[in-house]
Image (tube, rainbow, N blue to C red; front, side, top):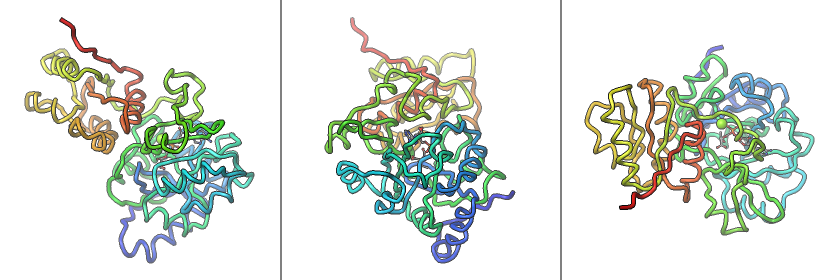
Length: 348
Ligand code: TXA
Ligand code: MG
């Protein structure tokens, strides 16, 4: 199979989107852009299409797919019940990076829901993708369009690298604005529970109801509510250790690796630390410390950078867990295989 790259332009909205919609409706796979990461799109009502999706990603089939809709009015076709709180959250955050878990109707096959009786639904903010969902005439399931265990793709080129020859087409709408995946939530006894932190923060959700993070996420338990959280994820090509906590201590620690000659170290750091590194070292700058937005935006391309520029060990600089930082540190925790070092302020 050759994988076609389709740019988003006038011809896309006039013609191409209908061709791609038909491919999806008839059981094919098309990668689509969103504000978070690129998705691997398939007909969410078609069990065979879900099986193909798992095969293309090399993903375990007990890890459910997120279903994408073009408008919140479509949700009641696929779920048994929408509560007033869920209604409010959809109104506030859709289209956007919030995924809500609902009890599913039988029209959604078990293959799409990974065997669960619930289904995770979101309405992405990208216009080319919402047009694709409308043209397909079916909801579109979409895991991130990477090979399982690898970092999520935030450009069409990243998708092409993993999916060339495995899918029919990739819709190229440039780099994803946010860069980390959507926040996955469920409502439990009137409380908002975050199963996967993402683009919509705990702080933003707390304005609507009491909100907390699934305790399995904090403790690394084997039974998180989002099955995907238990698998190895986002792994770069070299081992990664992330330093976070007191800024001065973090800088000291990271700079000490720049002087070591025992192996090749790559640095995945803020511009503030990068400035202090001697020129010529392998460095990827995720942005200024003051911008978690730029950190999120560059997070996955930074991890993938070291696939193209191989090193023996990646030394990363983390951030605090407020706002988007919760999602960033969640991804870095997984990418590093839990190699997170928290630096404390030195006392003297
Ligand atoms: O931003 C995103 O959400 C992207 C774009 C493409 O929309 N999609 C994405 O899908 O990240 P994926 O399949 O890579 O991650 C889906 C996550 C997994 O952790 C999965 O376990 C969880 O959502 N999930 C899906 N259905 C669920 C359900 N019924 N209950 C709990 N967690 C669920
Ligand atoms: Mg994923």
